[in-house]
Amino acid sequence: MKANIYPRAMMLATVAMLVSSAVPIVASMAALGADGGQHKLAGEDGWEAQTTAARGASRIVESSIRGQGWDGWSLGSFSVPAERLGGRLVGVWTCVAGVASSLGLLNAFICTSARNVQAMAHKGLLPATLREENHKGTPSAALIFSTASILVLTPFTFAELIELNMALYAMSLLMEQIALLRLRWTEPEMRRPYKIPIPRMWLCLVYAPQITMCAGIILFSLRTGLGVLLWASTIGAGLLLPRFGRRFFGLPSRELRAHHRGGGRFDAD
Image 1 (cartoon, one colour):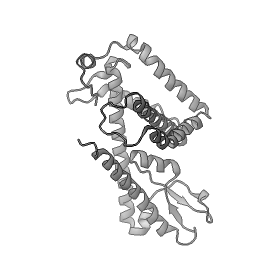
Image 2 (cartoon, rainbow, N blue to C red):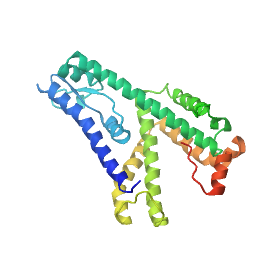
Image 3 (cartoon, rainbow, N blue to C red):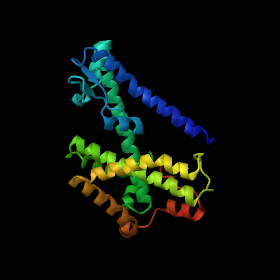
Image 4 (tube, rainbow, N blue to C red):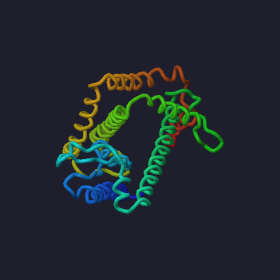
């Protein structure tokens, strides 16, 4: 793959996501906000807009404006303006499309999560049982483990789950960005699929707002007992599993040991 394909694909995907988010919002405002706020207006709240931009997922919300302020917006469904714009058929179509999108996102999330669990088991960080696959190549044990982990979260409220998701996602982005900057200093000549064509100091300035925002989200999550418990568990697992995991779960898989001996690339996906 040519190195310039990836940034072009990212730019096109960003434009597509912005358009797919903006078009229904603008159409809803035109359809429901024409009388100075007496009708309901559809839009996305701040967290869902971030999720749409970062993961390509769209959650449908409807808001009502009290007076001329935005503080009256509330969660709802794009099916309301869709029905007013195109009739009942378009409203039902919007609901069905939302369900299909949510199912696809859930399926992709569970499948990728199961592969992550399987990769950790291959490295000796989780029980060896989670390495197993069925005759179709599906990591069934890891899939069950991942699904059970999701079910554990069902007692939490939707707001708590949003905060949990965004805090973990912010930590993931923070680690990736810091790793990128560190490698530009420590391994500047290392072969890369694509290298951002700006000097290191400018790269730091470009990433400074993102790193600050991610750090702020993480600090904001520490204001609750749930947030403190989350980060204590995450940091504890990150420190203990590499040190003691193999004593309890066994050595890495033969495939991973062969990878280290041969200098090949182990791909758990």
